Image (tube, rainbow over all chains, first blue to last red; front, side, top):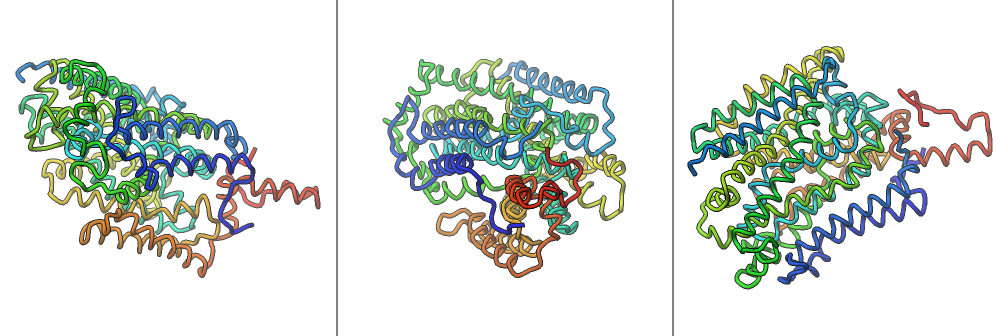
Length: 77
Length: 515
């Protein structure tokens, strides 16, 4: 059995991994530093609006994962 | 505030939670660990969504988060982000944890650790140390519950009586219905919190600005106190480094109750469906945070920041909404307290006392239920009433440990070569660093103590794992057939092209084979 770290086995898996990494990077430095301004976006402070954008992006990435890799990953009912 | 309506509403909530918790049993026998501990792995996606959501939204949302907004401003939103990331963690790891439980009979996090590393001692150590943090967390939530009853009753229900009332209520329905009680009550509490938070947030905004839009609050804040709208916040202590490392450390802290919640799902797919939409629940934080921002103008001289929502409600909102806020805050603290108490009783019985006393599963199941009473009466209640000054420190140390257990999970899901010695070395070193950087030299260079711990923990874990004897191959393969099934499918395909007769041979016995 291979002793290496587990990695995605298909382009679908890599795509979902890239989505996960992207939303995580979006919430931390340095990205959050670029958002950090005392301006309002849709009535909310920029960082607050960004936080909620990340929340919905997380949902979108997981929904994409459900379509692309859930079966490949061995989900069963 | 002289009206007794808030107290009636708050006590009404307690009565409804009690009835729901007791009825959750539905005539089932609770004598097995599988039934009492993980609800017979039966929860559907909606119940699971509310179970996890309400469990993670503690009294912090109704008291701490508005307090942070009031004292610091925008840094409070790090909570919304890390909670959303916890949903990503649940989406990826939850189905695998569920499959481990379903196939190997695990009902706790520590039993999975003991199984993967073939070390009951490592499982017992994880169970005991996680229990310290869990008890401290449950005590803080109980104090929050008692405080709400104290405020809603205008001081007529003293803290000690509130502690006894709340713990008695939880003890009775947890004993009777176990994880099913947590599932049903959290579903009710989750819906209640969502409704209450938005009612309070919108009403407070209207009473403060004459508008129903949160934008009016933030526009005024932008004009008068722009330092609240950017990091590091008005108190200047949420640097980019602390924001980033707090989020990352919180994201990789696998608390035992969450593990139990995943195992309670009816299927692996149920967890994925719940996790996918879980972040939407965290919209509940926004309106309560807005109340904290309103307090910056309306209650500038407040002594305790975490009372800002309650103080504002009592001074400016109708009695009905004050009562709903009391019920919502109590729901938040109870819904977070009960999974931790349940988890401590479960893991102490299953992972510490069962192997030590050689108990059967049935005896361990009965013991777990009865452990609730001494746990509450002899540990949680006295601590909640005495409110020792170092309680928060105990909690921080417990949470510090939770973040340092990461190597155990890396070895379970991502790296087959991880060994028992590597995990133990990593955890020990990471824990020492985290405790030192929490208590002696808090967060050097503005970086979270748990992150420093991981910087030492993970390399040491890899190094020691590389030079020590691996866990028995059959055990590792049993886990990685679930954690990375595609590895075995590709092996099977290669084998079938060479020797068709042996291609499907499964080398490890398991309770249920791969479909």
